[in-house]
Image (cartoon, rainbow, N blue to C red):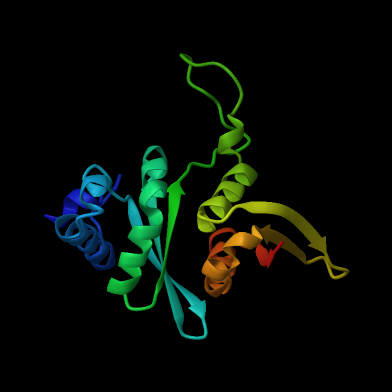
Length: 187
């Protein structure tokens, strides 16, 4: 029954993904405010990431076409899922495809690789998805003398009270997904 809330392109969902899908199904059945919104939504994968100092985060991958409907209910959905998964932060990210530089289209369609499928575009989109209710107002890349790069991301100051507790989780999850070091500041 819970398999209707997770659709993987290849293979069966593992135990953790099945438990997350079951919780989504339970929310759809019990929650009156989320019932209608969750009916047509599903995830493609779920991953648990260690954020250091004993904290963990849950990443829900959703199809890119369903990202906008997920954003409409994200705050309520994340609040409910964080209650169910006892203190672990829940993050929703769109499932995107990265195409390499040597990408060649089929004979039917002509043209270069779309900008939205490049590595940097996908990584920027992941960053936008991570901090979703908050807007990114600026980015700076800091290059240190020893060659390390740190991305400084300035978030909107009006959401500081809501997001400040999750900033370390955002940084560690983004670093796990993209191997880029990032620090979040409020402006």
